[in-house]
Image (cartoon, rainbow, N blue to C red; front, top):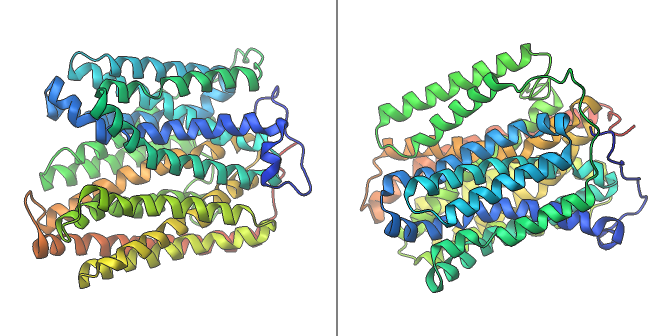
Amino acid sequence: MDSDIPVAEEGADDGWRDLLRPKYFISTIMLCLGVALFAFNEFFVSVALPSAVAELGKPWLLAWAFSLYLVFAIIGGAMAAYLKGRFGARLTLVAASIVFLVGTILASLATNSSHLVVGRLLQGFGQGITIALCYALIPVLFPKSLVPKVFGGQGIAWAAAAFGGPLIAGILTQYVSWRAAFASSLPAAVLFIVLVLFLVPRQPKADENTTPVPLVRLIMIGVGILAISICGLTESRLAIVSLLAAAAVSFLVFLKADKRNTHTLLPRDAFSPRALPGAGLWIILLMPFVGSAGAVYLMYGLQGIWGLKPAEAGLASAILALAWSFTGILVASIKSVETRNRLIVLGPLLLATGTGGIVTAVTLDTLWLVYPSQVVVGAGFGVSWGTLSQLLMDRASEAERDKTSALPPTLQSTGYAIGGAVFGLLANVAGLREGLTGEDLRGVLVPVFVAAFAMALVTLVFGWRTVVSTSAIPSAKSVP
């Protein structure tokens, strides 16, 4: 933890209005802005890219604009705690934001597809570092009693960006140009840099014995995520299986190398199912894994099976985002930490219930059931996400707090990437091909959602273990 950043003092009855006090208001805006920028740049591109393809050509290359953004966002997130420890939060955030700005400008002014892809790569790397540190700074800038409210505020920012990103991009692309859509985040990024310079103090020069960049381990992460991302660019089942196997090997090599190293990128008990950090991190990885089935194939099914228009189908995603934010706010308003912690298991339970509802809706041709099921899925994320993130921060030792705090957004992106690849393989095996409608498409999507439901049940097991561990393990001191 940066020794020069003052730890926020604890308040006895901090509430939502305390976030509006001068002491915390600007910090709240800064962290929510960092989250919103990441969400906006993840969601708006699906609207703007088709116009970019029409102008720049090479549509096969532009598919990498999706993949490389995600790959480098995950790599950046994995490096965030290391960079913060070596260079300080202020310098790291400013440098990452500048990388993002350069990438945004390059993408906006792209004269060919390669420039656009490189711009997206730089955007992803900068944003991956930024959002991870926006999480890591929460327990530093706010007292523990306000942390749930900060997560609630970030949930609102995420939902607003996820909902408004495609809308803003659509208006700009239609009435101005796709370049304007790409450039639309520049003012917010500049404002974020100003807030960082205003709020986050400088860190003294790092010790000369600072560890070197963990290049080999970062390459292993990159190879694994890149292999998963390529799965979405091929229809060959053999190629997808081979790429997933390569990703699994790469991740295993990384985990073994990281555990052997004195200076780890991950917390020591990461992904150990019997320890609190491990079980909690599995939830953070697997809930997005399950959610990716709906994010990709539910929209496809709503249009292909029931003949809805894109805007009507998009309502299902908007409902999920709103339910996530609303539930997150309600849970953050609960004063009892013990009660919030016990509710963590309710997240995977609601996720399983909502996913089961989608299975039923697709199987029995019951359109109306899709929308309440999406509400339940969104509530599952909202009821557990912020509390679980805070729990992991609180229970981490001081030496591992930065690593643990920065992990949730990185694991979230990883979960969506792996889930998209795995469910893509299942859909492929089930016979997904262009032009399927009605009953044929239903036959493809039912096994996809059944598999998602099964994985949600696995997530529920980790939720239960987390709650049991929470009551069995005493809290670690998280601040000096």
